[in-house]
Length: 99
Image (cartoon, rainbow, N blue to C red; front, side, top):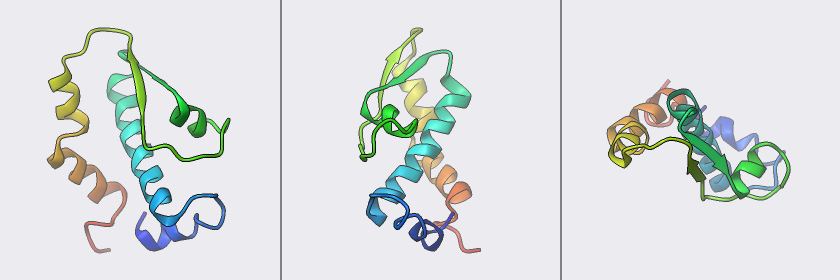
């Protein structure tokens, strides 16, 4: 999705455009975590409740509990490393590349 497509969701949510953009990025990151680390992490807290529709508020914090030991460096490399995040964003959001 690009920024223009995300603007369509502003009216259907209680979120500002900035929050809609951050929410979308959270979905991308959570999708990556789910595919690669679901056996290791439990997603919890306010953002988890918002994602499953139990609360209608935006939270920038994503809270997790380890189910199994994880080397923080491996998790950071897979999810937060700038080159990986840029790749994820450019493919998924189409904001960093033109159509």
